[in-house]
Image 1 (cartoon, rainbow, N blue to C red):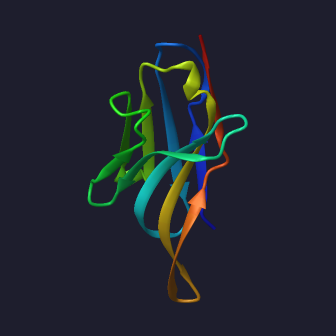
Image 2: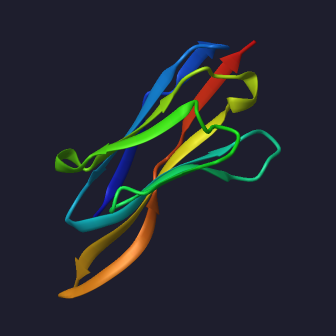
Length: 123
């Protein structure tokens, strides 16, 4: 059974920094893409940052230049470094992974999600 566990959320003042971590555990064959999403109160969930296995990254326009996604493949862990935080960054942040597992000797791919971690930026 695969599990994604997030950490690093909290309360920070505007202009400050936080780093979120997401660790994947279980019998994972590979992870083809890792991501961070967020849902602000009253809003739909949006993609914040994504990292493909070939190293390609993608960021929401609202976080470009402030947020950085990175990974540690050996640990099946990825990070979201958030700098120059703004009040509008306040949201629940979720990590995601497009991963492959073996199920009855068959390779199965699917997207899994973390439980979410609250980030609150005070102005």
